[in-house]
Image (cartoon, rainbow, N blue to C red; front, top):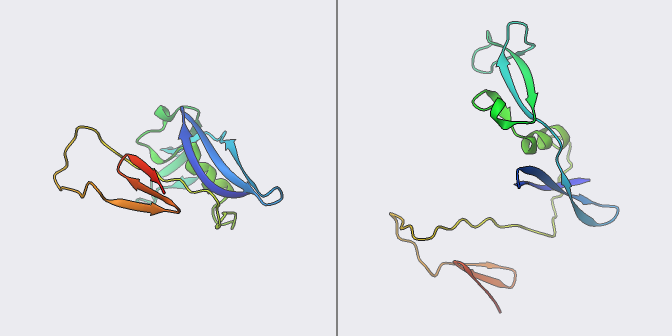
Length: 134
């Protein structure tokens, strides 16, 4: 399997991977836990900033437990680190691309933007919140 992307949906984490044998992309739920490190005199890890600080790895199903702690990772990024990082398992020729377009309603910006700014993607033109197919 080759990694294509990961996202969060309804408080669950998912990844899309490409199976070269079937030539298809599939969606899978990520079942990893949240991970972080806490100071502990018997910890086997050390802080990057201060090597005298000993750390112990902690894991949980709740993100609240590890917020504002050393090295906090959610399941999505932990999955990428554990299963794909440095292993040459990325699909570098994906057939599907996703664009995350952030918009606001009723809010003006300091810097005026061209309201007719267009982005061409394949045979589609996107104009603000309207999609025109030609």
